[in-house]
Each structure stands twice: as structure tokens, then as C-alpha cells.
Amino acid sequence: MDKMHTSSDAEVLTLFKDGAFVADTWRDLNEDEALTGLDHVHVPLNVYLENKAELDANKGAIGLALVPGDDVDALGEDATKFASIVVEFPAFTDGRGYSYARLLRERYNYEGELRARGDILTDQVAYFFRCGFDALTVVNEATKKALQENDTGAVSIYMQPVAPSEVPVGTRPFLRRAN
Image (cartoon, rainbow, N blue to C red; front, top):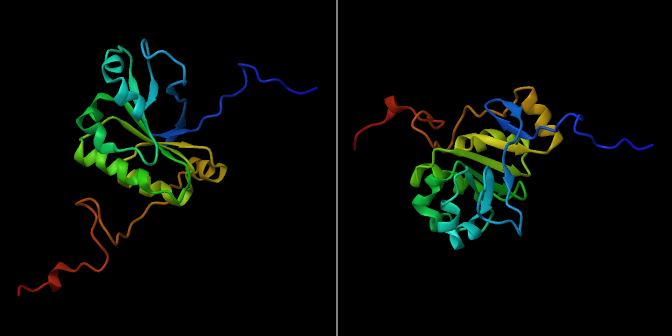
């Protein structure tokens, strides 16, 4: 006899945040769902832009879902309205989401939860955090195991620094001369 799924079965945790896998309280908006009374729901960018007033009137926490090809600049300063923004990574070879994260954090001053979701591999984890993500939805078993073992693939040598604290390889200020 097949074992049926019951509510007592252990929940599969896929959200990695603050150094541990935790329960995910957010969900995606259903296609035919009403846009009122929402709480902890990620709404696609096109739905938000078409229904901004209605969605902004919600009392609950509203999140945003971005997919490759979305125009983050169309969102602009509205980014700060969202409690959570999830960026889809449909393939590990698609790096547009990294740019989305940097734009949201640096240009639009987004300070809420920024999560990556999709095809996330262990060797990308450090880069996600470096670009501004603070949560990852991980389904790749090898990546989940590495994160459970506290292996984030940390990078200590930078060829192209993105923060003032990152010093590029080969930088020797004492050898620089004024021309």
C-alpha cells in the first residue's frame, strides 16, 4: 500500500535564510485569484504594474516576483513598497537576476527580503549573497546538503570588487606612483 501524504509528515524546507533552512511563509499569486485581502503573496511584475492601486490597498504583506526579461526600471521607487521580492533563476546560466538584485539594492534602495529562486548551484551561493540576496529557495539536493554543512562557497579573492571592503587581487597601493 502506498504511503499517503499527511499533515504530520515532515515539511520539506527549501528556503535558506540567516544561515539555516526555514519554513517559507510566502506563496505565489494564483492566476485567477482576487487581488484584495492578500497577505504574504508574491505578485508578478506585470500584474503589479497593471493593478498598482488595487494591490497597494492591501493591508497584508505583498511581495513581487521578477522573471528574466522583466524591466526592473519600470518598478522604480515602488520597489520599497514590497516586503519581499523573489527573482527567478530558471537556469544556472541565466545571470540577469544578479543585475536585478544590484539594481534593487543600489539604485532603488530596496531593504526588504530579496530572494533567489530556481536552479541554484553551490558555487553560485556566495555570488548571490554578494549581489544583495539574503534568502535562497533551494531545490538542488547537492546545494541543500552543502548549505546544511555551512559550505557557502565563500570567495576571498576578488578580480572585480563590488564593495568598498573588497580589495582586488594584485592591488598594491604602496607601488602606485603619481604621474
